[in-house]
Image: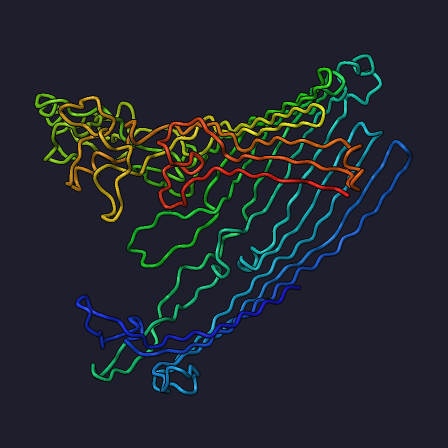
Length: 578
């Protein structure tokens, strides 16, 4: 049990402010409370209880057949409650007590919420001579987040493995293949995160005030409004996962590795449908999306010695593709990033196809003659961007292009923002107490949109340096970025979501995440000082990367301008064991 208590005393007192010319400001000191002093007391408490019980039972019919049964239950609940009260117009700046403030301006409030999750679970395992393994699992989960009749969900799973290298017929191959195992599994997982605690109820929101009567002394009545529509039919998301894998070890266990392929199906994923604005209320998410992910992972490691030099190499690469199989509504595609779009991967880019910059007056006239029915600014100039009218209807239209349909639109599918082909490499070497290790990590495909642009943005922010001398002009016809302009419409047009190389790119990168070198002193020396082991080391973190971003941006958070400056870290240390 965790029991937390939070207590706060808040006080807003008078303080002198000044006008621009140095004169005293005798007006309000606290904007939100109309210049009145304020004292407030806040008290919150949170109670969290976690309880579980489980047992194991072993049943062995012989050395060949071994069973294990595990069964249990768990329960977790949390209750949060809070209360606050405040008054305005204190009689003294030095006495911030509620009883010493104006009773005409006294206010209070209270909040509370609670949730609970209960589970029953069990597992039956079988082992046949350490060659064949099988397992079946069961659980029944109940959540307070769902309506009556939707709270509980049964979930099942099963798995099996065959250690082929333990079979007698495999003995002739055991010198070269030391270990070989095949794995199969299927299982269900339930998800209840990402939704509200009380979405299943129709509620009334009370907050703020409505003034009635005399405008000089109005009667203030609490404001009430209908809340969101209740989610009475929504229940657990069920993620079904299937996996096949192989584990192996070769050449006296010098080479080891594993291969895995999996398929995940979420047939009732939480999904927010699009409704007409005439609905007049916020609609809840429902179990309205079928999303499938398939992918795999390969890991290899090699460990050996050359004389007194020991070394190790391990590598891993994984990939997965997440696709929207079906949706409960017909969502309209839009320009930019589409989280859900039927028959496309999640987080799909639908963007215009870039056609270069307008080179001269003839090129400008030609472009306007082709797109003459709308979709582009009328005040285009040389140096602005061009985009392809894919359906040839004379309009640059933000709808999905369909081949052969002259009235479809001009957006094309251009990949997904999901990361693909993730990989890592671990290296290590040691020689007579000296050790060196390194870890490299990267992404092979990660499509991104650059949200920065030249000549605009917040008035207080300096333009990024990489724009300088890289925007189009008469003497820079091959520049990377379009011409500079203060026209907001032209700027939005030039920097809209498209395949332009200054907007859309593959943020593939390789980074040296960590490198460490150390030296362990010989035991015959350290034991003289009562030390069993002493190692000194130096470590570097994020020392370099190979990427295609301008200097200063972090490839793991591309074009994020609101982060602290990216840093490289160095450290030295000593490990001592007595």
